[in-house]
Length: 224
Image (cartoon, rainbow, N blue to C red):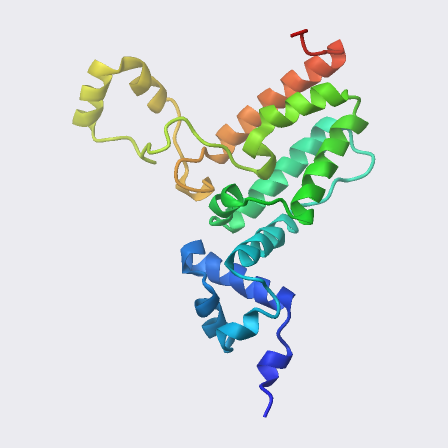
């Protein structure tokens, strides 16, 4: 007798189940065998819909990218890019494993390329030259996906005890002063070492302001 669950299996269902498994247990818990167990099928049944683990991970990234809001027509470039980046960040917050998986992808899927192309289209449509757009995308780096690598990747989310802070301040007064200047909310981080929402938006707005000045000035790269 044919298994009804197998009859209903398709690529979309496989990827949705993989994302749900990663959300619960992390990306390391996702394997062809564990996913097959979750779906109630034999591992070989999955290979009709995904070519293997790498294709599965690519598809999982595509599922997350699909959650990023598309550009709203007619919105000026700055709020449009800002909204797109923050929407990407919200997707990363919903799926904390996605950052590391995205960083390991060796190929760019059509969904990833569509996201980059539409973001670049916002800039070009906003009056950015192709050359400046090229530099802006480099400056954005991973921020276009809603995360950045913080300087103090292993910094604790809470300040050390008073005696430890006193010792730190005696040896590294500038670091100690800046550590106490603001707090980190553990609920807003994308992953270990990422900045919190306020810091992310501060850096994003700073970058957008700088990009606008260069655009208004008609910036071109200096001759080599």
